[in-house]
Length: 125
Image (tube, rainbow, N blue to C red):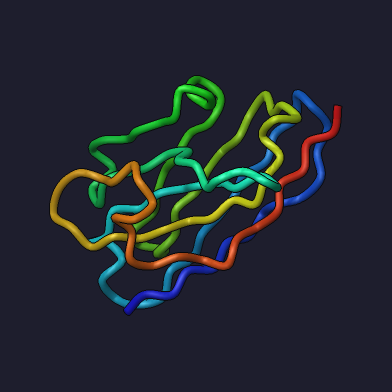
């Protein structure tokens, strides 16, 4: 079992940056693929980014490609989401997720077995 705790959310003006962190408990963090999802009010949860356990492969939603960067530090049991050039439409609760697997990283929420509680990101225009 792994527990996930997100941090780093907040209020930022359009064009600004934030870095989200997701700290994981447990000794097997390096065996988990990690993902970030977000959910805006009245909308379904959507995929943002994912990274394999080895950081070899990353995936991004088209809406954030070129602006967001996912990374991880297995020694610190932490995954990050660097968000640049933020837009008002990026406003949402951001969740990190973990799935234990040897290859790949899911881009759909139902494939992830562990979730954090979420952190609010609000981008003002």
